[in-house]
Image 1 (cartoon, rainbow, N blue to C red):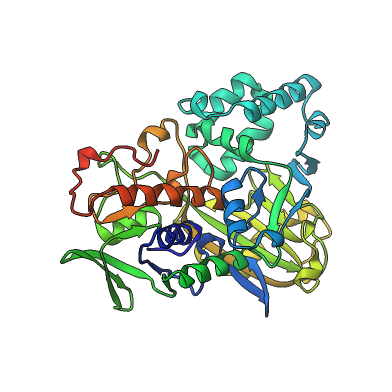
Image 2: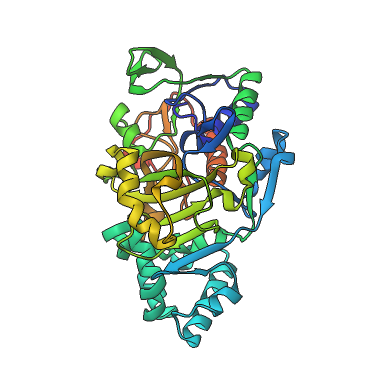
Amino acid sequence: MLGGGVLGLSAAYELVKRGHGVTVLEAGDRPGGLAASFEVEPGIWLEKFYHHLFRTDRSIQALIEELGLAHRLHWYRPASTIQIGDRIHPFDSPAAILRLPELPLHDRIRLGAMLALLKAVPTSRPFDDITARSWLTRYMGDRVYQTIWAPLLSSKFGAKAPEVTMAWLWARVHDRTSELGYLDGGFQAFYRELADEIGRRGGSIVTSFRVATVDPRGDGLAVKSVDGDVQVFDRVLSTLAPHITLAISGAAPTVDGSELPEALAAHCLILSLDRPLTGTYWIAVTDRSSPFLAVVEHTAMLDPAAYGGRHLVYLGNYVSPADPILAETTAATLERFTPAIRRLNPAFDPSWVQDSWSFGAPFAQPIIRTGYHRRRLPFQTTNPRLFAASMFQVYPHDRGQNYSVELARRVVDVMERQPIESAIEPSALSDVAA
């Protein structure tokens, strides 16, 4: 198993439960992948990228309960808002939408009605082959689109925003709930327990193993680390981004040899402050000049006392994998972000900052264009012993822990059905991920 994030650990757990021997190779110093945590101070953990659960995330809730951690999962109703111009407005209920001053009443009613419709439609199929821009302008109107959706889509997808399928936005609206779940002590407790359970059932987890190559060797696959360590397996499941899987193995996880989907990198600047920044958990930023697209004040949902009195704020963004911010120092990022932070709170001063951290992850968000469902990658690759599963296959849902848990079960089913001796012709690589 390549990768010890939620998908890799969930797949490993499913495999050991079914009686298979499993070794998980994780590049980081602890399991978790994109949901891994760091210590803000000794014994106090925080995710590198903001995470929470929705009430609709039933698969991961079931796994949390199976691991005996249900008593640590608590639910909150934090404020979710949108910044339009220099004003921040509630954006988490029909009543809040009806009070948006930037839109006339008939546009607000239309916006609320269409959001209710998206909640009610049970499948993405009506939206798979239409762009978000086309659907939103037709059914919500151009003024609503230009005021709210165009800047939000552009902030996330940049120049590709007009090509993004409405199915992606349907999932964002349909799956989300006003109640959010979080584990006492953070999700690191979940990953630690999941890793421990894999070990108790006979599996093993190797950390700080950065994969360099995956090559055929005899009747198996040899996985070599950048440090020269080699481990040989009958089969390998890569839960890395497909771009990385292809680069290290040469085995194409593609249907017809076409190019892999474009992807964005995730970046978060995390500030530990001596006071609240806004007192609001979530702010969606519509200002296209802003260097970040979301502000998540973690301790507006969780008690700062759980973090030694620290007020913790994420400033999140999606950027090109080649964006200079991924190599920028934390201090330089904070200095560049400060004017935009002051638009949220004019009183903000860098002296409020006790600590700061920044984290980046390439290939974190696929760009979901129309017709993505027809091009979705299969779990099999052109090497019959190598399988690949990643967030690029959770369509139409957005990246998230819950859908990785579901994907893990599906790929394990496929691996068990695929005879190890059978060769796979590229033309036979149908959408087995469906």
